[in-house]
Length: 301
Image (cartoon, rainbow, N blue to C red; front, side, top):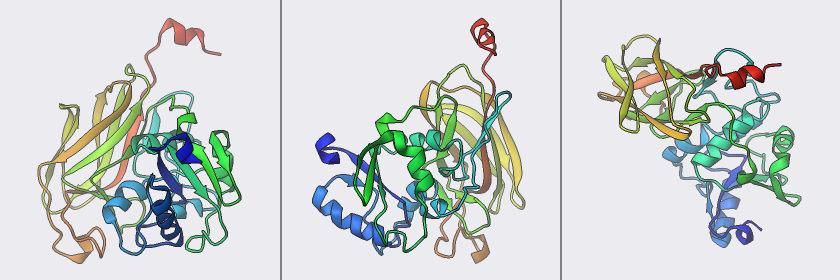
């Protein structure tokens, strides 16, 4: 059905499980050998850590997130006045008010045209996911349905009306409690900005591995901010205000060096002892209110 609509479509098959192997990725990998469309599945036993770090651990459709009875990992709280805060590391699930904005950003940046929700019996044998709240949130984007699957068209999503962001390349999952990530020497942030007149700010809570690190935040060849991160304990740094063009923007965090852990406790994971620059446990995008104009004043209730 998807191939008839778009022979070059890329599909995101959810719930998303780790590439280390799952019943769903095995079956969907087999189906891909028939339909030949691009898909996020197919790793059934041989883990792909790069894929998981890029596509799984920041996904709003990750299986363990969908298994939570009421999603408590929320990127932001809607406000009518003052700044809007969005945590770029914390995952967001269907119960969050920001789910549709974040899922639009996630699927748009990664060029997924359709989302397929699998709900056949036995698909949740690894993680007991619940799909009722996901079905409710995505109902208006549905274009095809059968007992085992529902297809949603990403082009029917409405782009966000306020800034929202997520992590992309250069971030690796960490064994620490919470949402800590390790940052490689260079890492990407993706921010959708609907209004270029809005002032943005970024705060990062991090610590260096062994030695102090100089960090630069760049966008399209220009430096937005520069600061120093010390080892030892987490400390918060604010970048100051900056503005971005309308639409999708890819920002780059660049450190002056990276180091390899010398002890297992310093490694990102037992299975990941690769070099990195920073350990980060909070990354907050703050969007200040738009400047007052006669038009905005007239629209107030």
